[in-house]
Image 1 (spheres, chains in turn orange, blue):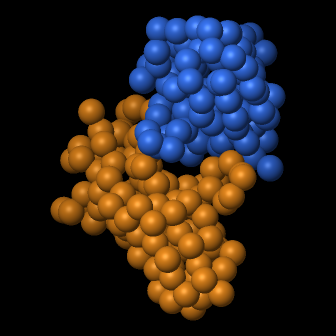
Image 2 (cartoon, chains in turn cyan, brown):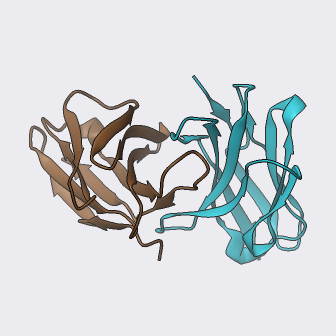
Length: 113
Length: 113
């Protein structure tokens, strides 16, 4: 069964710092990849998604992610974080032909003003 | 607002009791997913329905059951509740197929005392 690893459980950064959150998945077939964000007290919102094509995908709020098939990775990046980026970030993977999304355990991001 | 409506927002009940969580998907979405989010387990997939039929089953306990009605709303029934069932229960919906992101509701926070 597919599994998703997010090795950074809690990341603390100062405003304007660059961000990279790791995501690795286990199954090497064709996959769809997603990053979701959960602001405190809110529901999960889609940040970006990758289905095919250019492995560098851009999402909302200045976030981007790079799919590296050989490393089974889909890391999330942002060049300069803001205090409002404080949230929990979830990577999710869907195997092709399967509708179920498998989530990682999440990374809590705290931005210090 | 994701368009997915979950009720109630909060539920406090005692061990051994039974509760029903309700979800209305986004207009036009045929698939409904239920996820459980707890501090130690992260986001766990419970079950998926598509147009009234069960499509996929995850880590759902036998004490839990769900259904999707002809109007596409879904209910998650939790019975013989235990302290460990305390969690956030999210519903998500998508149109269909494996290329659609999931859109999440705000969740129901269940506290079992």
